[in-house]
Image (cartoon, rainbow, N blue to C red; front, top):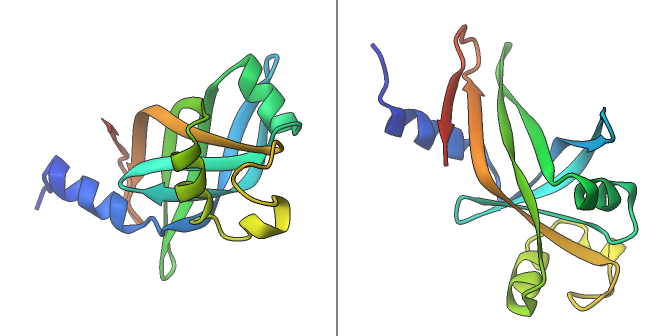
Length: 143
């Protein structure tokens, strides 16, 4: 029985934890660069923290288009959630503090939300592609 787009969206959001590892792609000139990062999902918005001087931050300053992929497993069945968007730097002190508190391992990298090496990124203009575990057709929608 076909599911509605609203049911699919609810299923997608159900795969996200408040903080989890995903694989983020940035671009260095024309070469994609993929690495694991911690992602915070808060109020159905996506946030990433990185070092201000990191290669990832430099690449995003040059080209803010990013994608991340979250593998989705259900037993032996595999699927994925791929999210494309624009990484916008967040300078708001309240947001930096609130989101920073949600990042696993935050204290291992930064002294606090005012640490100049802490860059907070929010992914906006989000397009989601979802392939349910065991599915054969991906569904794409805009958040």
